[in-house]
Length: 346
Image 1 (cartoon, one colour):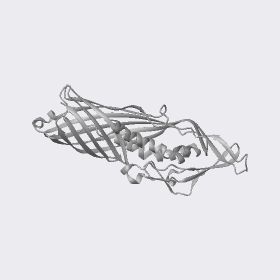
Image 2 (cartoon, one colour):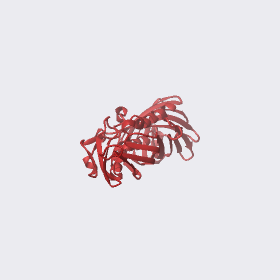
Image 3 (cartoon, helix red, strand yellow):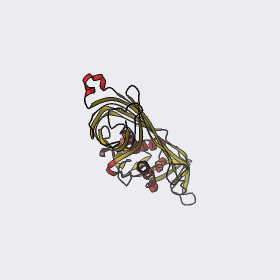
Image 4 (cartoon, one colour):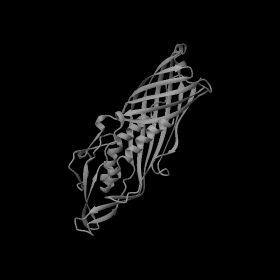
């Protein structure tokens, strides 16, 4: 369980900590409308990837547990961000004339290192001033996969129902243990309907319906910055993600192996918020001591992301008594692989 959680935490912290020299907070030097467009475009592939990954791994069979039978699963899903999402077309953002760049593109969350250089031309205290910043580079995700771990517990209920709970316990991470944290919680309900189809309940084929919801919250404390073109104090970045899936599931269950699949609809949303104090340092073009002027920077309002679409899943599970090993692959907006183990008592 700790290893699964660590995968996710490393990705999240890496996306911020390795970009300290050209962090995403530098974008706040731009006009608030421009900074909102840049941040929205930068984070969109990552947020959509997390939503798709959070909707994966809810099942490895259509057969429900007998009353009070249960299983405990430990697994992780990884959604692959399409390569065309790796670059941001700067011109397509329709930024204002106060923000310019000699580059035509800059990396998104899933892109490569080396963000584009931008120059801000604005007015502070009646003076025409400038500031330069470098947009953040990408996170360099392995195989462009966005991971989402989960520990799940499934419990058999009457009327061929099965309740499922998944979670990542509230944990602190990063250099500032008081500010950076992550938690995830999800609930699902599976209803087996094999007996709706008459003779099918005499065969190894099982059919179920599934509805599930997951929510995840990540808070990241940004260390105070006291030099350079942007200064921060008590800065915090927060992600709130929600994912929902409804699927029809079928599986062929044999003594040592079963094959399963599903077809359904995935939906999700996420928001990114920043808080704290951010101060920009702008160049006046005059000699010291009046060579710079400071300005309190505006923070973009909530950045919202949405992902919706059909999903088709195929997978297999190997049964070694009460111990199971399973894996699946889902064709959806961001194709998603899932691997895990389970301990099952039916």
